[in-house]
Length: 238
Image (cartoon, rainbow, N blue to C red; front, side, top):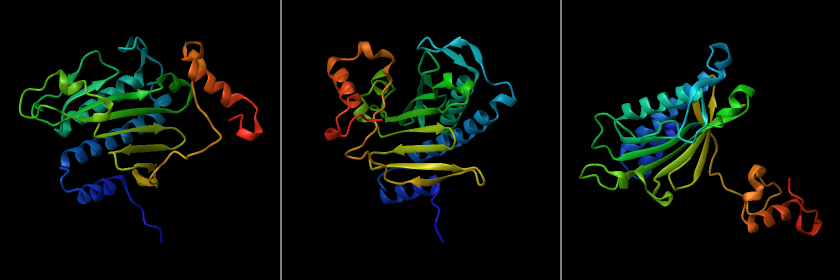
């Protein structure tokens, strides 16, 4: 009989393996997991309850917000604030840093795009949530912008959730990347893609060529190489 490892079990096991890690980060992940399930529900019934289409405002990138953008933003911010572990949330959907009420002494900052690819919502294509978690630099004094504007190398965890033909939760804490697929029958994310790695070689490349003319020459040359027909090099790539 095949055993099933849920996201919650996996996180608990990881915490037991590294006892120096406190439960605060695990609590954030549990709330992100709950948010993913809630957004998955909203995405799948969006066309039935009038939450498709535009909300009537723009985000900080100047992009017109979709109704689900706003719902996802409010959902994740509420859950992260209620976790008690986040001092602040930085979201693409709001202009300013969101300071979590009553969490002045909390240790973590979450930066996220609550619903990336929202222009795909109305055409039933894949969309997703992107998140990055940082530990504040000044735990013994008032939080300031240095805690917020940290380098990517300082992340303690990062991941994404994709809502498509299946809903997946993929994350890392720097010790491997693991993917979990939502089993709708039990509403649990189950480990489906353990220890994900990029292969050393492949036959596929992926790039948005919409701004190709703005790319550096080296990148343009590499794309040309990927597209050229050269059987000895295994190109063209798909």
